Length: 227
Image (cartoon, rainbow, N blue to C red; front, side, top):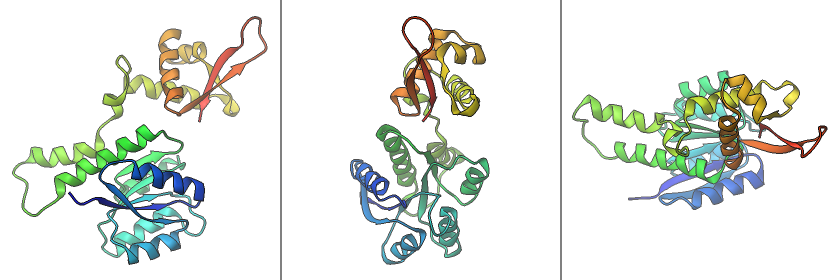
């Protein structure tokens, strides 16, 4: 199968280079360009055949979503994977409306990045070639490939619903302060052991950071905050 041709777009040169290196570690993908601005991205898209854009939505000259709009206005079927720190729900909604296939929040691990690319490759593979689908279930399978939850990638015994509640609890901490496992457990109605399992998983995958909390007797308590 021909390699999927990727354009990396990010205004931070070190981050753009890291995303290029990550992409080149995934079988079946080829980086054909790196752009540090929306203007450079549009020039690269005119000059190169690109299958997938890894697009930062916070670009210095033009918002990343405007690159998506320009692509669609030009009739381009190039796919876009948003790789961004933008958490605003209106931004997420706009990205979905413009046909962004995946939305990956920074910071992330290579494993999370690889999962998105692998999912995209499976989705693209199901749509290659002419012809028609035979039945509704084939269409459902294509869309399910993009909408798959991370459940299968979680360690045994963890579930997505509880993981979301743990993250939600951390985001309610005032002033960006951290929470201990006991505090998170109290907020979500779980045991301290359960909360700590989820917090440690999130720390190991780079979605939260650990830090010691001093001030009490004995060893410092570990607290967690979103990365």
